[in-house]
Amino acid sequence: MTQPGPVDSPTFSPLYRQIKDLILQALASREWGPGEAIPSEVELASRFNVSQGTVRKAVDEMAAENLLVRRQGKGTFVASHSDPRAFYRFLRLVPLSGANEHAKSVPLECWRAKAGPEAVRVLGIRPGEPIIIVRRVLEFSDNPVVLDEIYLPGEIFAGLTLDVLKESQVSLYSLFEARFGVRMIRAEERLRAVAADRASADLLRVAEGSPLLSVERTSFTYGDRPVEWRRGLYSTRAHCYFNELG
Image (tube, rainbow, N blue to C red):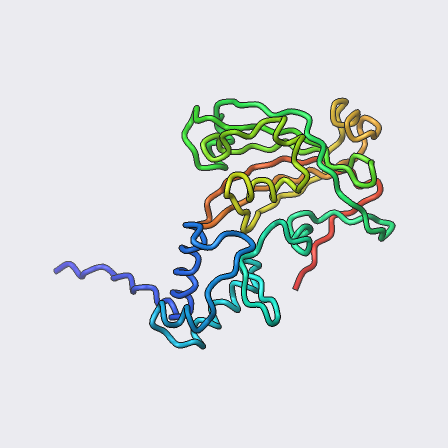
């Protein structure tokens, strides 16, 4: 007689994690936009029919993940890329001098194309779907430090043009958030060392063959949906890549 195979046990999710998922769904549906206050813990507890402590635990975890921001005496707000404190969350470059430098994005090109195999794989879209490709230089104290090539789903970022990028006075992620309703929640990066070719050397003002740091990043929005793939070349002549662990 054939014995029945093993039966997978259902995955248990603590109640506060279930409440966290419900709050995330509200954020994804833009019930509360970036920078806006969310209801109080008492109101959320009543809405979800749970204790205030359960809501607090969910909110605490979301604050630790930079999804929400607690402000003493004011309430809890949806995190926003426009918050100056969040600027360096996704940019890990720091000057070797220790100086406080201002970053400036200099757009070079912006064009539409059809998704090739790599964009399809990384962004989870179908072959031939429209994508938008952006090339820009990131300057610190008027010195070019990063050369980025950025791939975006065309359906989400329809209307993004070189003129829009040049006219923007905010960071790229702030622009994506304010104009297209896309907030980057987390990112995965892969780093390796490369040598500058002639084109990147000219744009970064380094000698051809100079060592550069190649940083490939995939950024995700709510629901763990990939919405940006970028390949950057970093000049570490006067800067280093800094990441705090623990």
